[in-house]
Length: 201
Image 1 (cartoon, rainbow, N blue to C red):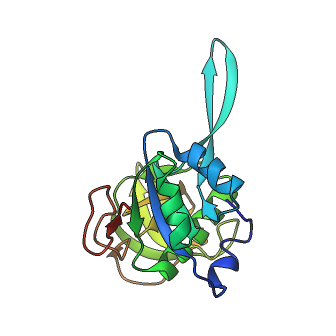
Image 2 (cartoon, rainbow, N blue to C red):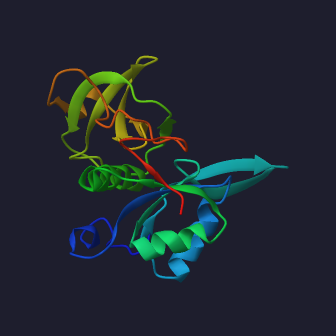
Image 3 (cartoon, one colour):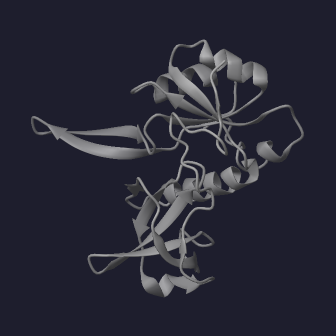
């Protein structure tokens, strides 16, 4: 993330910047992130640590939570520049920037907790809850029941994807009736149109 204050205050300051979602070519998320950082353009690339082993050696790498997606908080000129890097397939327009900011703050808190995450490629119906205490305190999402365990699903509504982590039921409080997590019903796929919109030049 650049800068560190992006989700805590910068997005609320008056400016000509807005949220865009960059849909990158395969395995280009980190490369475009480095270029954005080099130009001091605000962005968020959610990543988590992944451990792997090869020939008896243990390796730890940082991989994007959502493959091919980088969240750009930039001006129109910065959006146009990003397309010149030859690392993007297209740029998606965000119709509800406040909702995206909220969702990204929740995701950042979940990642910072260190809990093992599972990427949810589609959102599921469940009870709407809030975490009462612990490193995830204050997060709101849907509780999923799988294999005898409970998982808290935090959604990125715009993508219609999310991330979940295992959690104890006693840490949760209900805050609403069962629902489909995610308010944005149009999936932000590379070919998405209408509510999400696309911009390519």
